[in-house]
Length: 43
Image (cartoon, rainbow, N blue to C red; front, top):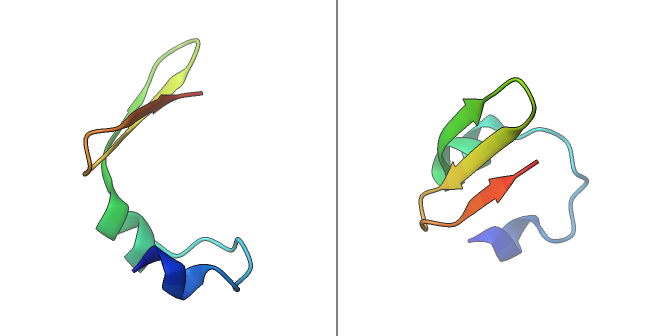
């Protein structure tokens, strides 16, 4: 699935985001992205 996008630029893709991302929490000092796989990334 993600390999279909490997040779493409990093432009925003609404369909791909909706497929992978479950939730985004925005806090004062950071942002937490939770993927549907259960992985969370804090930025």
